[in-house]
Each structure stands twice: as structure tokens, then as C-alpha cells.
Length: 383
Image 1 (spheres, rainbow, N blue to C red):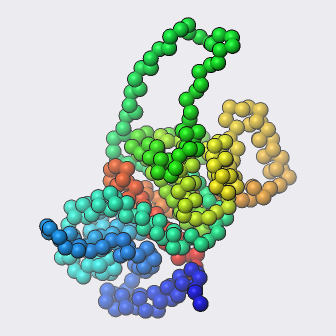
Image 2 (cartoon, one colour; image 1 turned 135 degrees about the horizontal axis):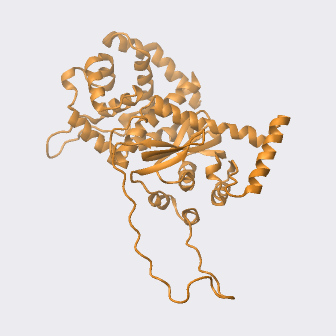
Image 3 (cartoon, rainbow, N blue to C red; image 1 turned 135 degrees about the vertical axis):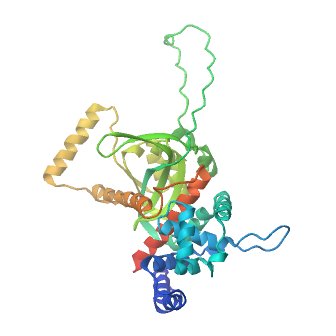
């Protein structure tokens, strides 16, 4: 009889508690809660399946990349900001060193070797592939009720890229001003959302800007905030499990990444509702969600429609006075799951302290934290 995923994970946790942890403690001494957490995450992620050893060839053998990949997961678990902090921890902590795969301090690679390995992981998108495999194994056969979508700012220590200066457009011939009676006005250029309707996933992802620049938004108190760096867009399932991520320029509006993110998640899981805030209130996003077979739950954005704004405020006031809640109101409250994931990613898994430069390396740093958070949240749901 085939065991369900929950039964398999339960047996896995019992095995760790009964035999794996005692065996490690005999060799390295008492394990802290962080050590136990890291062991559980590494056994679930299975880095060994995608990071191989040197198989021979011309040149000097490369240092084992598996141990360094485990170390970068440990860096996210311990919420470290730099590789130097990781190396100092590895030299002082025998338990962590053995868990990563090094027997003695002499075997720990130099900081420059860690940097080269990290560049390789970023170029090959190793953490993205590990996360996709983890979602494939644990969430593919699960019917997910809600996908909550939102973005969070990522501050980076690099110079923002200035937008290119647009060339002067050729002046149209003829008289300036409004078109004559009976003449059709020139058609406006299609927006990014309109163009995304006819693109496949590769084209959707390639169309998004990814360079470092300046972003701005209003916080919960209505004040404008600016930052230099990027914006991480997340799709989060019930249970605070990240399903897919996209890193774009900080200046990109949230709505521009909604359709690519939805297409990416649709290829990995099956869900019923798409829950988003008012920044995603666009007709193209509503229609794309319905084409995927989902029900969009998007907060209304009145924009400049004063009458509509007053109508929504009056309706909200009436509901608060009568304490009325529709089914959509109750389901919309699930959107807080993505906000909690953003907070955990920054406070516990290193997303607040990005010290690398370039979109690929920043994404690699963030995805090691996303992998650790995903595996940790899955283990929390069964224990």
C-alpha cells in the first residue's frame, strides 16, 4: 500500500528523532534546535540529487560543491549576512561543520572558493531548481484552496541603473491638435498587460525588467517609501508555503508580474482561488485568472473614480456597523499568508541582508532562504 505524503513525512521525522539525531550527537556533541532544524531541512531538500561531485577531466578537481550548497542553506537558516560570518561559524561549530560535510577545519574551503561556487549556483539556478523539485514532490497532488500573491522590496548595495533616454519621436506631418471631424484618433500603444495575454511563459519572464533601480510605494500609514534594489514577487499557498518567485526591478508595478507569476504557479500546482490586493485590480488579470480555471478575489481599486470610491467606503462602513461578512470577505483574509511569508523571509532567512550584486546572485541568495522556509513550513504542518 502506497503511503501518503503526510505519512511519509511523519515516518521521516520519527526516524530523525529516533536514530539520526542520537548518532550525530555521539559524534559532534549536543545538537541545538538550529542544528536539528538544519538536518531536517537538508534531508527534505536533497541537495545531493542536483549537485554532483567532480567526475574527472582536464584540470584541477573542483572542491566538493555539495558541502558548500549545504553551507549556503545553513547561512539562510542562521540568518547570516556574509560568507565570512558563515566561515567563522563553521570553524567554531563542529556540529554544523559535520552536518555540511567537512570533518575538520582544514577541509573548509577558502572564502574565494565559496564565492566561485556561489557564482556557479547563481548561473545554473540551482536553488530555483531545488525549490521547483521540492514543490513538485510535496504539492503537485494537493488541491490548494488559495494562492495569495504579493511583492516585497529587496534593498541591494549597488548603483541603480538609469533608464535609457528615449530617442525623439519623428513629428507627424500635418496640422497639430485634435483630429478633424470624421477622422479617427491614433490608436494608443498596447500596455504590458495587454501584450502579456498572447505570450507564453518564456516570453512573459523575458519581458520583465530585472536590473537594479529605484522603487517607491506607500506604506501602511500612507507615507511614501523609496529603496534601491529589486522587488520579489511571491505566490504563497495555504499553510504559508511559497510556490513560485520572480525577482524584478524595484520600479516594476506589482500588476505587471501577476500574469507571469500565475502562469509559473499554474504549471506546478492546482488551486481554486487567486487572492490579491487592490494593486492587482486590472481587467486583464481578472480574465487571465478565470482562463486558468481560478476564481479571482481581488480588492477593488477605485483609482480616480470618486463616486465609486465613496460607494465602496459607504458599503464598507455599513458592513462594519452590521458586522456582515460575505464568503469572499472571509476568503480574502487568507491574503495575510503571503505577508507572513515575506516577514519570515526577511526576519529569519536572510532576505533583509543582501550583500551580493546583480539580479542572478541576489535571486540565488533569496532562493536559498525560500528553500529553507518552504521545507521548514512543510515540516511544521505535519508536526
